[in-house]
Image 1: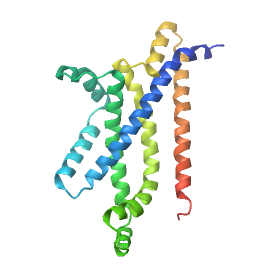
Image 2: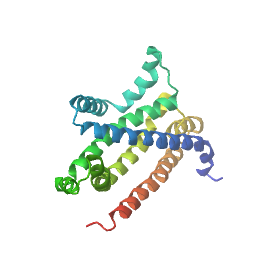
Image 3: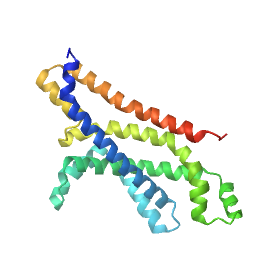
Image 4: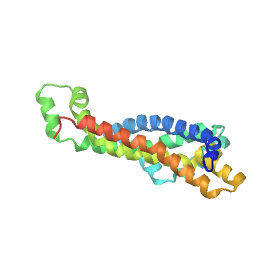
Length: 215
């Protein structure tokens, strides 16, 4: 391969790790977003308090410090996580906190008249949520969820600081061994964009699909 493409084979293992981190932590973040989002709307006070405390803690502290804490501090309490597990856990918990706000605000944005219509049709609260509220709220959630997914992908670069061999880690290692700084980090930039762009297109496609037939 001609320069700078001759650097690609050395970066590919990092691309695989970045993709794994993005997929696994996105799944965890999505689950947490819905669980905590519904928790913040719960009619039970303690559930709302615990959910709110979780969101405020993860939004109010640095993602990098959270990563360091999970990887370097937890072993002092007898819980040692592999770098990949620490990365997935912290990214999922952090972006799940932001996602829960998306879920909560999207559900609250559905007009109350929609709930009243469900009551008038003798639907149970569960049926109203599943058949009326969530389908409408889901469309509102899509754009911010798409943004969060892109932010999560970019956030995976921080795991290089806990020794995980992701794309950023491999790029930094390659720069030291080749001293081709401009070529290495230009390739890393382009690869991140190549990974992110299909995600952007996917979210737009989903928005278009679910918007059909709506005003």
